[in-house]
Length: 117
Length: 115
Image (tube, rainbow over all chains, first blue to last red; front, side, top):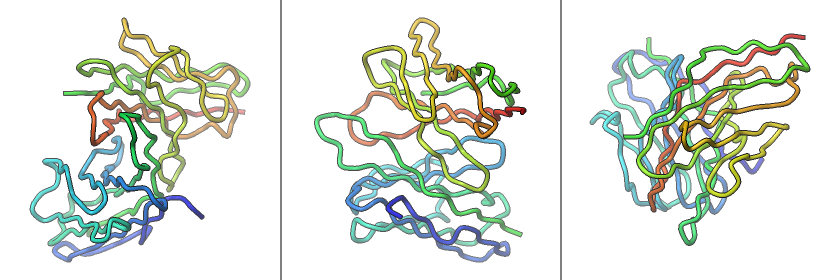
């Protein structure tokens, strides 16, 4: 499968625990995005990487959230001291290198569903 | 700030009938517009996009959408619905800005196609 993959697909944790999610983008896609989708809502942008550089962060990304993309390939999203309000689907998307101002389609992974008890 | 409105939480249509899922947007300047579909427990699948050119955009699975600048709308359409089209549909907008290309999504419209 050459699509975007995410791991785990489901995570149940207790309030106060730390969790980490992984996203593997499509090979050679240099741009990577994280979104959060709560029940009954559309996805909301969290953060963006171009290669290994984190270039944009949403105000939704509190200090408890941290994302990395150390080698410009896979990315991780960590949530520390989880709260019940963190329960959501966390989606990752990637797009290939953009040239000359062209706009490329974002390809989404299946998501990680987090439940905080 | 950019935003997307999907005024219908759910659209019901009989199989074989035409379907329309509505979307209006608000963005400074000219937008990039997208439709994605989400099946249960799965990520978003790209259907189609409007970047420039012809206002009628054709996409995957027989779907099309019409960009209407004066009405700031980008409605999704299909001439003949299938039961398998039942899913959650999201309209999204991105401003024409170089560099990072954040998508702003609507709240989604659930399409239910009855046999």
